[in-house]
Length: 250
Image (cartoon, rainbow, N blue to C red; front, side, top):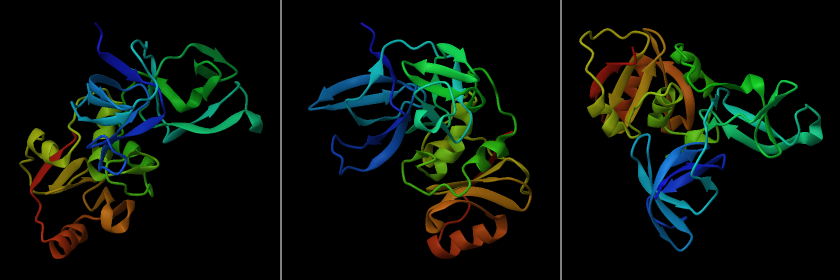
């Protein structure tokens, strides 16, 4: 019996316990694969196949088969009822960055991925596309609000901002900072450069050059660019945390 499924809603919160008042630990995106561990009163306990993350979601729309061919490459792709730009065809829903889907039909620079659900062709890329310009992906989320457990334009946390780059590029990377620290290799040079990953206990940031970093920063409640040295001093002063590890995306 096949116990692996694909999620078919734009995204959903993953809860620590089967209760909406429980902590949101992460999210599941459209097209993401998961395994059902158990079912209970409208809730499903799942394990994501990408990063082995375990939690609870409400019993929503999912399928056992999906021939994934493309992925969303913009921060959010508008969903249309028909393949044209007329205002009344644009729905209120979007697919978040990194969503993985099956293109069924192409027409008028639109693609259909479900019945009466169309996306603009320019908002997607083939599934095997690799974005080598990692700074481009991180900057896509600039000014996105900080939300613990989030990994979409509706809200994102620091470890998800880093992980989403690898997820988009079909590469494994852990979800939580503590696991990212253990997974990452120490950088030998102490000089900061583009692509460096700076870890603190419970926080992570990515260097966009030798002087600046980008991160989803709780105290500022958003994704922003800050000076590296000032950020290190600020976190030391406000949270009493020193840099724990420096790694690199490269």
